[in-house]
Image (cartoon, rainbow over all chains, first blue to last red; front, top):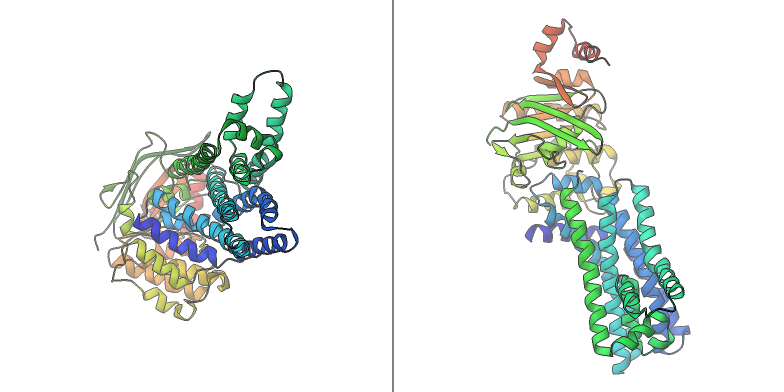
Length: 263
Length: 242
């Protein structure tokens, strides 16, 4: 634990000084400000920000994480030549990437949103849900980026795989769900579709937010289904639990690969 | 400092279909400078990485004993090991001092540090600058400093003088000789035979993932009837059908 903390603190310093994270924070801040200024009321701005959270956050997290690990390859080797366990180093790497990325999001999106909204409890709750979903998605895609970079030796192929992970979960997966719906329209599909939706972190985050925003039935098949199946509290809790599982599973799989990897 | 030797017995390593090491048996005598040489893809780097625990032997693939301790996954034995990789890529946004601090932290902040190379390379002036602003040669000097910083009993160097100017290269070679005289085991790889002849006492020649010759440099020169190591190694290569 002590070793992981030491690696984490040096990773944090390195990542926080990189222009990538600053640029990412500025981009998010600029988008949030624009949406708040020109996108209508706070609630409307939140809905527009939903797409930023669901698409941009996973993309930047998975690409940044993958590139970072490939760039740090020789330094990882040097650290592994020290009396350092692989588990501690892996934990330090994950934290050193996840904390600055999630922090940049919380500061760049969270602060303007919370300053804008005043003290309306409904708006505040929606903001917190959006921020929580954003943080969890960041963690999921950083964990996935570690998996990709540990598993695939070649940097170009790894980067391609990271992009594919994003493309599949952000765009292709929903197409697949719709295709299944279309093909088996005559059958009772609620169960299988629910399972399919559970397996994609972006869909899960979408469900979490749509249930929170009271727009579930209007915003696509996924949300409508969840609205039907769960009452609010249970649905939100379930989606949160599944998102946490989506962080834990790739993290543990990546750790297993990292422990066995030949550097 | 306890002298640390390395004993490698029947080590095998396979990367999918490619057998990189085919039962390597090797003893690196403690307190001596041993050079591992051989053609490209002979398995030298893989063997070094195995001693460092970066590459794991294939299942049932032999044993490596460092300083009397069998390497079996735990990182503790690396307390006594220093490593200088061929090319150092430190985190770009950290300074040399921060990297040294991190490595000290990871080793429990020992009080006694070997900062001789830091002084000889005159790195103090650039130690607070971000790594991205340092030249390749300066990074390589930092790499050498780190390898000796914690008074290792075994130092492993992968082509140590690559990227160093002649002056710095000389400083490093002198350091290696002094360390060896003080009982440190030095294991290095390289392709510049004149340098190896100048430095090494023992030589290990690897080809196709196995050790085909091990002995002292003098012994090899006598056996081959050559006066220069480069020619003697060329004979070994000829003998191996290369």
